[in-house]
Image 1 (cartoon, rainbow, N blue to C red):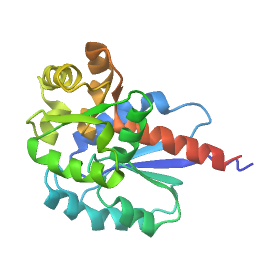
Image 2: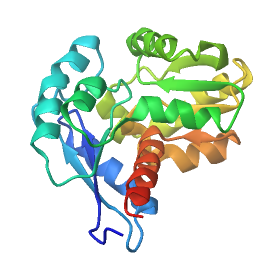
Image 3: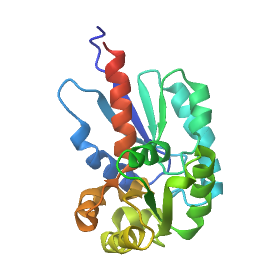
Image 4: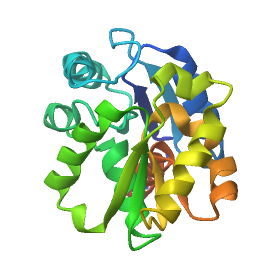
Length: 222
């Protein structure tokens, strides 16, 4: 058995430290004695918010350089719902790399027959739909509705939760979603309150990805 404490590095690909702080706080339930160390980092070279395809593309190379240079971490989580640089980073390291969109959707499929997604903005939806088509999951996709907010607003806005509840109810009642995925890492602090308000499973994709990473690195210690 390998007794070295493994390390999971969770990377916020935008340069907004408030988002990173929210992620770090939301991950508290996954930290436990003798478990993997979970370290949250902000990509300083990233855009302030990842809201367009251009934002996604601009984060790829800085992410890749960060992953390639990190020899201390046993797994990486890319904490942006567009999974920027996921495949490039997987090519750049032999260690596992998890994208939160991929992990969040796969987790939702274990909780309900059909899932819906809360997006930050309308222009994110086409990008997310392309990804779902690539994953072959559109048959179990109920729909996606936007908050019409920025990443920064979703992380620290005063009325974010109220808006998320409103959109979540539409996904549940009008679209038939049996589970709801939060489509931005900046929404992390609202998961429990949103789940209580909706009465259906609400998936924080970052928690889902880190949970998968924990299982992977723990089993590697046996």
